[in-house]
Amino acid sequence: MNYVTVDSQLRFVAQLVRRCPTQALRHAFVQAMRDWCNQTQWLRKDVVQSTANTQSGIEGEYLVLLDGEDAEFLEVVAIRDNIKVTDPTRSQPTECPIPPSDPSLWNNTAAPNPPRTYAYKPEGMFNLYPTPNQDYDLRITAVLQPKDNVLRVPDAPLIKYSSHIEAGALEF
Image (cartoon, rainbow, N blue to C red):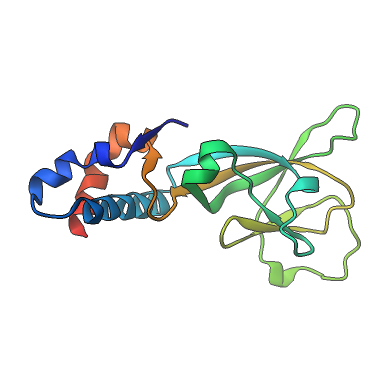
């Protein structure tokens, strides 16, 4: 993903509110982009990871891991669609989609088995049910938004939707 500085995007907003401090403009622009990304769920990335290295430290809870600049400037706000699970020990691995479900319906005493469903938790975490009985490869479509107070944002939404994001910044 390519990134641009927030300051390079402020010129159109700054023309309309000339005496507004740059820091306030920066904050308004980032907040508008966060709101737009969260509401539209347009900004997404496929993340491939393993159940072996994504434990959050709490049993059965996993993190969606971003890498590089994505981890520095973006945060996960949702998981889009199904998680695709692959058993790497099979001779011909195939992806099996697992849908989201309500964790209150899960049997907490179920024996570890291949996961059949997941539940998203806030801040880029999710649970798998039943608890995986081995390491599985996961392909997750993560819905992203810029972190609060970043100085760089992804350029992809700005190519087509910059006027919408700038209008949102003016509302602040």
